[in-house]
Length: 465
Image: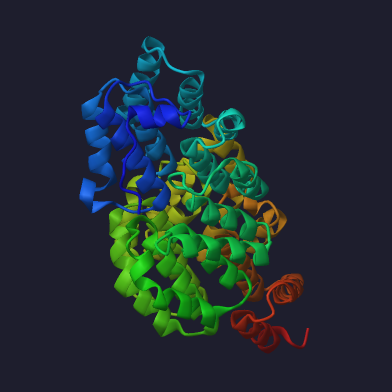
């Protein structure tokens, strides 16, 4: 992993000058960016949080340092300026300092992009980062911020193409070059170019076996192609590589558990939850929260009793019921409320979402109104035993669900939910819909034991219709 942090002169030499005279601030900027891109906390410099503190201590007026710090908070999706006055103050400080500082045009665009993201204009923020990349294609901060934001937006072709168009401008000896492979691979797999995605991920791993994002991209390839045994073997034999990247390890364990659920090996999935996902969700990171809630809900749809595991997850989710940063997050937080059987909090969150739709603004507000709220209402209906209503709410928006963000594998939760609701509904039309959805599913992934089990269940329940 990269350790020779770049100072002021090195950033200038690479055509990406930073407006600070502090070499220490520049080096810590590099250390933070590197750990962000590679999903790990470098113990030699005290981890990403310690590096952020050192960076801003070295130069409290370092605008790009403030951009990086605030940008990471935004893309962590656990804080919102709408509710967090301290976070708003941090954004305001950045904007004021930017006005007082003689910045480059590139740096000013970075400030604007972060401000737009904080204001809810996520797509416009991405446009600004792309503007930067037209002139500065090796600006990894702009590239990574856009990549993560496209993931949240469900802009899958953008996520692929944003990387592809800058790759010719990079050289193999440039810092962080190898990580482009995993990023490109993920865009490829999300747009169904599985062969090319696998090649890119394996190339990245050959260059750096500890690239957890490339590991993650390959997990997606194996998931989407129905290669569950390969997935289990791959993750188990490379454990020492990708678990060094603690920021993404929980999610890769989630993938491992998914392979077991697909095969009907529920005990294996629960072992992974109890040994890894459950303990890791205590980090409070939104990525880990989504993994935990999704995994427990999938197990419950397989008729597995997960016991009181929901209680710990709910307590971690509870502070976020009014956030409404991403509709994707909202659904998973709501699921935790229902899983813990906290009906009052479930209703409180639903009311909060409706108030946000009425009074909020920005891209996520639009998506929540059109797609996120119907999904949440569908889950609430299902939880209350109104399976026909759950189908009626979910079925019309199923091709719009991509707009709430997340990956194809993550959003498969909603496909499975719709199938299960249709099977449990009393409406015979819904039973036919369930069978058609299962045929769609089988056509996309032939080696899919879970689909086979659901087909058998549909025949047993409604075979005479």
